[in-house]
Image (cartoon, rainbow, N blue to C red; front, top):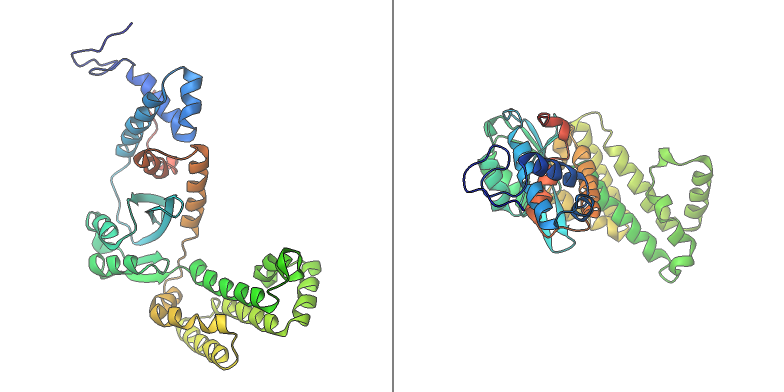
Length: 319
């Protein structure tokens, strides 16, 4: 049996039972596979494999090239444990790179990342959802940057309003009613509907005038994002609000506080047409990482795996 080395060893390292090359191999394997699977395959303990993930992830992240100035950032929160713990992913949207994973989603936690950001003065755009602590952190640390509310998150609120109208039209239908089955049909973009689906939708809307109005409001708001410039967008948004104010329905009127509080940041999209589409894709990747690992007892390793999800950004591992 091997004994712990008392002196530095170029093969094993101080006080290690396994070679550095083998630990590096275990770490690389477990970055993309469940720890339990790698441990069973190699006949080692799970504790060793988890330690190797940490060791290898740190080495790979330190191997990155020197940080370059970032001008367009994206922020989005995600849950580590559903409904309990939230982290924040921060990406370079222009270069499609995960820059960091912040523990938490409060102002001081995000601000600490911005404070340590190299060339922070060169950031000019930050894309985010409507999370007030994010806006406060940008105002505090990146005052020269313009906040852009992500298009997806604005439309998400509009879609929820449409769905609330759907459930209020015939609340007793249950899961077997035609309105329940038409939920995704109503939310699908009009231009993506097949002829058969469009015919079904038009027949449904013909039976429910209030739902038809809600659907048309949803589609007109989507069309608003195709405004030619900011001036045209401001005028069109005002007309849309006036129409909702006069005729309803109530769930769409409930959008007014959001549109008032975040109006400038929503309109900034027409000056800086960036979205968090890449980051939303990363959030899907995060969900895959969580499923692959069957949950994480070590949130630090979870964040390392997210940081390494763009491995082409990391220098090749030496043989």
